[in-house]
Amino acid sequence: MSKRNLTILIIILIAIVAVVFGFSYFSKISTTSPTRETQGINFISQFFPIGKKTTTQVPETPPANISGFEQAPAAEVPEFNLTKVSSMPIAGFGVFMKERFKEVPVVVPETPLLDEEGVGGGEDLLPPRPTGTPPKIGGKKSKPTPPPTEFIPALRYVERATGNIYQTFADKIDERKFSETVIPNVYEASLANNGESVVMRYLKTDEKSIETFVGVLPKEFLGADTTGGNKLTGIFLPENTTDISISPDTLKMLYLFNSGNSAVGIASSASGDKKSQVFDSPFTEWLSFWPNKNMITLTTKPSANVPGYMYAINPDKKDFNKILGNINGLTTLMSPNGKLVLYGNNNLSLNIYNINTGEINPLGLRTLPEKCVWGKASDTIYCAVPKFIDAKEYPNSWYMGETSFSDDIWKIYITDGSTVIISDLVSINGAEDIDGIKLALDENENYLFFVNKKDSFLWELNLK
Image (tube, rainbow, N blue to C red; front, side, top):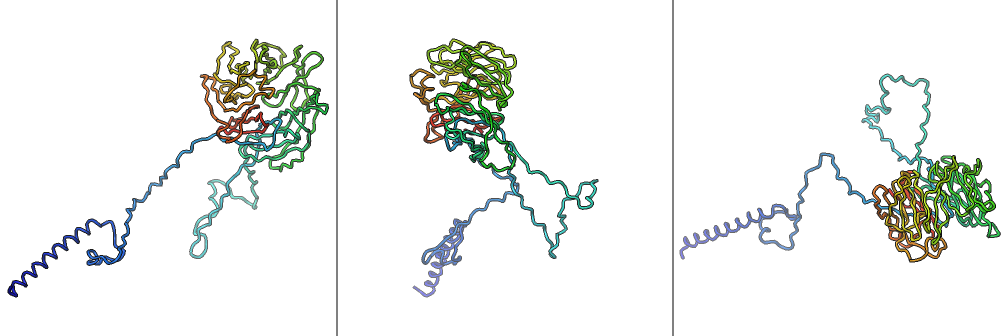
């Protein structure tokens, strides 16, 4: 081959190679534009890499949000929280509203802006005085603003073993001893006069006679420390007082006792004075309840095979009117408005009796009315309802301790008769079975309180 032809062939081959390399290079650049080389962009290294090549992904930055909108947090699912309140078995408790100082977050004042010379940069350190307001003369100081306060549901309860009284707020359980007067083995206790009076019932040393003591608690002042060394002063009610009920405003009480062959009912103040007899009967076995200021109900003590009867009296007029009767094992709970009776029979079936119309509405639940509490508007009821009920004689076997229940909390809507379970006590408690008694609501019905009949501990269910 001539030298001229060889030169032409070499030029042609170089041109072909250059075209192929150029095509591959620009194709590579177009498909790898989102990445960049961390070791430079050497042309030869694109085709003949030596060693391991590292690449870094270029993130796509979203546009800045200048609207000031922030995504709202996910809504929390409300839960009913169950809390054991007392650290000991109790004989009874009371709920009242108590004032306390409100917790206010501390605000740290902002540091004023300074100019280059360290002087306030033209900003007024004091707020401008409103137009027309005269300046203060003589440096007179303004009156300090009192700290804000709030009223919160509070509890006082009586220790069963000693009669000592403890207290706590409902929203922050902080059990503190309030009194140290020792009354051993208190069987039953009630709080009255917004927690400032207490009624305790216990057996005397002969273990036969029932003693009833009405004590007045020292007044507690806002912001004062609870020392726990307070003493009770008070009076004793007649021996063998058989029943106590507290008025809905907690300022009065009714107590029953037997005099000869008759039962006598006395209405008095919460401290035991200002007495007035409102009832007497040749029948001596009564259970009382005070649903409103114009009505006190009296129901015969229940037994499975004995017809029971319910009556009402007006403490001012001292009349005596029959409401229900001839129902075996009758137990009752009158509504706050005095128009509806929640009652049960010897198979624990719950019913609503309308006094005005005479209508009876079965609720489809089985429990005792004393394991329930009415809402203050008389349109709802909360009940501790057994999960399972054995075939026994009721309510006798439950009163005698032969039967114990494991309860759920149900809510009953009176307007349409619907019922709904709001708390499986065993599930949220995790271990203990609860046989709920002495149910009570706070003033705003945000908390449901009850005692476990199995061990007499006080519990709280947050309904908010």
